[in-house]
Image (cartoon, rainbow, N blue to C red; front, top):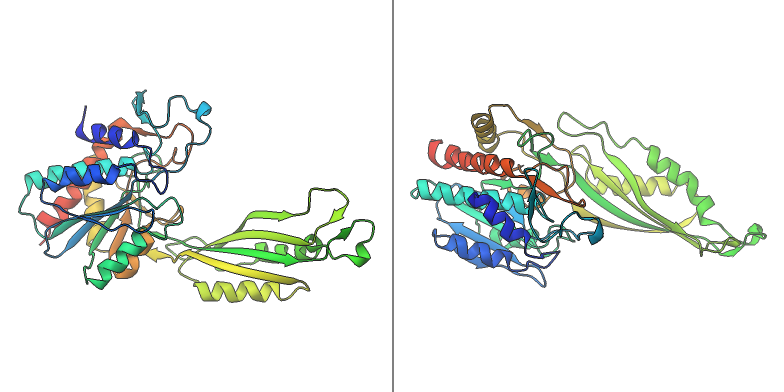
Length: 378
């Protein structure tokens, strides 16, 4: 059994549903401290954040990950207990196998192998691991980055071990992500009897044209790196449950995944302009989950392409699809940021799993990236 597989099984067995770390970080810290990594725990409220660093020289290469996982869903639908790592048909099953304890296991063992072979490597290596990526992400990486910035501890290269692969391991690397802007809208009406609409005001009816306008708006055309911005309604609720009552309020939640053609201020202004075209009273609140970011080139991407080609024999593709990741907090510091990890086909699903063979391939790719940047690079 490989060292990566053994480590992943250990991590999966720990019930670390957001924001509980379940001892994962302490386990990893103890393991890497023997290699000369300095251990710093930067916790905020219920969130645990681990900063492990070996060396002080530049450049600084960081592996970024999270030990928290999403809830399991109905246990009876799993073919094996979600926190009992189970091997079958060439795959390891368990919650977090792909998202993203698999990535963590691969980059930890890659670091161990690399340091064992190149103990006097150039630059410095760090691991930043949080327990609040799957949740609100308010006390995780964003807080650690603030501390690093205050200390002028600048990250040069950051590899996020999120499951980026699509059809086969390392066929896609994420070189950026769209921004995510969330909104809650409350449309005011007047509750009343359905038989007397003249003395009521149905917010569903008054809002319907505005909903059509919002969803049909062409926000932008995208660009060479990103698809067009999209507005999607995620929740809508109105009514008391009774069939003879006109509701007094409608509540709506929507999200915009936006590219670098737009910014938060512009989106808010355009949404409000659309709403103000219609005759209803409303309250609107916003939450910015993250701005778009893009690494369009540089040494990290070059090293990753070369490493994947050397280990697998095929070329990888740069992409900016998918949701958000904690990379959004690193990119604004000026670091080159990419995401490379296991296949994403089973993430957040029942029977989440990772290919056992892929674990070794990914570990080798991570190790080769370190060699390219901290040994071979002039």
